[in-house]
Amino acid sequence: MSLVDLIAQADERGLAASGLACLDRCVPLLGGDDEILRPLWGNLTEASDAADWGGILEQTRAKLGEGHADDEAVLLARRMLAAAPAERTAARMRVWADACSVASLRIHRLLDTADDPATLDSRRAGRTQDMPPLAAAELRRQITVLEVLAGHGAGGLRRALEVSVEGRRVLRAVVSRRARGRK
Image 1 (cartoon, rainbow, N blue to C red):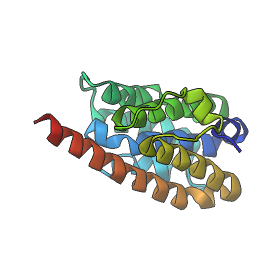
Image 2: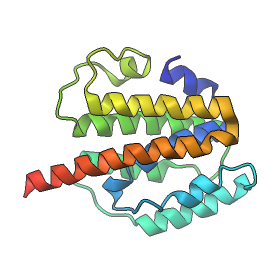
Image 3: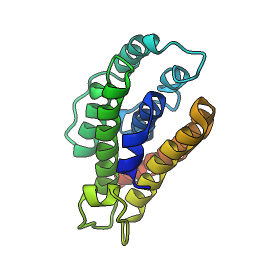
């Protein structure tokens, strides 16, 4: 099933986790530590109250600060955080998850050294032949997060977080290598 189809079929928790996972993988661009989004992940469990999401989100935004971005990848990551809805409803989360998917894939394409002439829409629809490795891995992670949550509900959150942590480590290494190259 394509990423577009998975987003269209996901429930509110799956959509929130999908958007959050995309943002989480891009935290190295925002200067955040590995635990900065942990309270938002915790809010997705069955025992948590969805109404608390907005307050936790505001605290997270305050910790990450506004910051200025000359770099397009950083700007896209900041927009993902800024666009996160304060209300955790399926309709709002669907829009955010879709926007985060596109932004995160764009970020990974910007940071990838290989050129990709295909459109993001075609990639998200499932046409992945000859896709650059960094962006292809990000697409696989997005699909995995949605599939795990569709199959296991709140029980899939741990696996979704593991997938996100793996992607964050990869992006952190790319960002670090890129920063060394600029010196």
